[in-house]
Length: 72
Length: 551
Ligand SMILES: Cc1cc2nc3c(=O)[nH]c(=O)nc-3n(C[C@H](O)[C@H](O)[C@H](O)COP(=O)(O)OP(=O)(O)OC[C@H]3O[C@@H](n4cnc5c(N)ncnc54)[C@H](O)[C@@H]3O)c2cc1C
Image 1 (cartoon, rainbow over the protein chains, first blue to last red):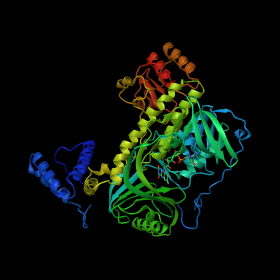
Image 2 (tube, rainbow over the protein chains, first blue to last red):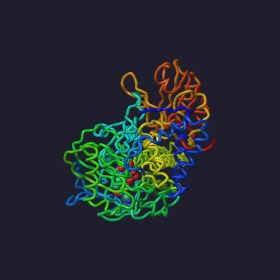
Image 3 (tube, protein in one colour):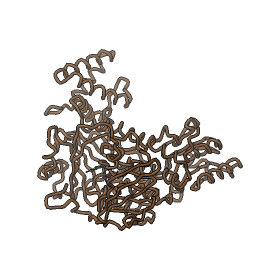
Image 4 (cartoon, rainbow over the protein chains, first blue to last red):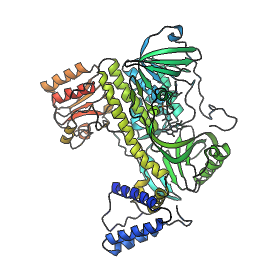
């Protein structure tokens, strides 16, 4: 149970808004484009972070605990 | 529904009584105008009748059935509802039989990802939550109804028609002993989610229906786990779906599970399917011993409400006025608060202690609470049963991150019912006075309890009327004494408590100093508070609480 944020973190109610915006945007992208949409989103955030270290850290976090049998 | 060979009321642990229809004066042609008639003796109708009786108001309570609701239905009683049962003198058997709790766990596949701990302090008299099967709740409320001579309980009496005038309503009642008309100045429609009263008046619920469908099943088993709420996302026992498990008294466990997409409702409720699905879930939680199936039902999440809870002399309370998703246990609890809110207001109006305009505050206060419930329920429902691919994928991401990281765990919070603050209530006249305080309950909030040195609680000392709390180390000033006299003259049920200890727990909980004054409503929400007493504003606040709509 680790918390390794090195960049300023978003308050919970804003994280919740981010969660909702993400869900709705995936639906807008549609099933054929969801992977490319998510990759574009990640890359854009990587650019906005200002340096590559926190981006690599986020990649490691997101790779962790991926399900063996595939997800949703 | 129950297993093959057992009738609707053949429970493994509860004996349903049968109540006969009563010979009533109207059947002999003796008509009188009743002050209040309540349609529906579910938990909400009975709570309303008991609240009215607290103010000396007689009521006729009608129910079409001959016994309590079948099945355990709503099982979670939140603290504010326990406080209401306390106020109406019915709480003792609830405390005795129910299972109190304040913790929960959420799991994603095999991982525990969230530990729910509902806020609780030793000053509280009741725990945040209690589990009790609904038919026990109804039995205990009915025992209190039976002991109350002011309530004329009429079972097997179905309302089949209504004609309303501005100041009264004429109900058509059908019982096995005959049909009759019942004239009533006010009618409380507590006739449940399908509310025939609503249809007869041509009113409709409005709002949203959600995707997810759940089966609710009760099983009897010896299973060793504390009373906690367990939520399982995508467990091996129900792949792709969500499961909730609650413990109830009498070794009964509630298992709620989400149906799979495309699964037909007809198949889902077949006994063999119920047994197979419940069996897989019990396997998954490590239950190896025997279990018996008690009751099951199917359920869809909706957020629906009437635009106006009042229609002339008819006032809607409980499920007839609003339907909310069960996650977060708000259905029953929200209705109990409706019943208590309209109960004291109608009690005051019928006694002529308050102007009838007081009733206009019922819809904004209680519908406001329902809309707040909707906002929370919408979030938890979308998490429990993601409606689209986008929501499902976002949830999967949040849950997967939650295995090793804290920051998404809050999204899996079931958002249990919290006491509601009547923020923009017409009964609150001076909300700006909150700015003078650095602590304590704001205007419209439920008054917090404080444990007293003798083991009792502050709020036990409140009467049935408005309550003043004056913080004063010395004898109250002449100005304060005059005010208290005026308040007692305006409200025959008024009580006052002078708190002498300005450094004690009560003063600190209420953020009070010398000459601080709180005015509590009969439902123990704050009507107004003044860091330093302003008598004229207190008088005007009480007047508003008694239906004076002048600013
Ligand atoms: C199958 C099922 C499962 C549920 N599960 C849950 C749950 O898990 N958690 C939760 O929080 N809530 C649950 N609920 C909802 C909960 O039971 C309700 O919120 C609660 O019962 C509301 O109480 P009420 O008094 O407003 O209505 P009800 O309990 O429905 O009572 C209405 C009463 O009105 C009577 N009536 C109806 N029409 C007439 C008429 N014309 N004349 C006279 N009497 C009439 C009925 O006989 C009934 O007794 C469930 C409901 C159902 C049906």
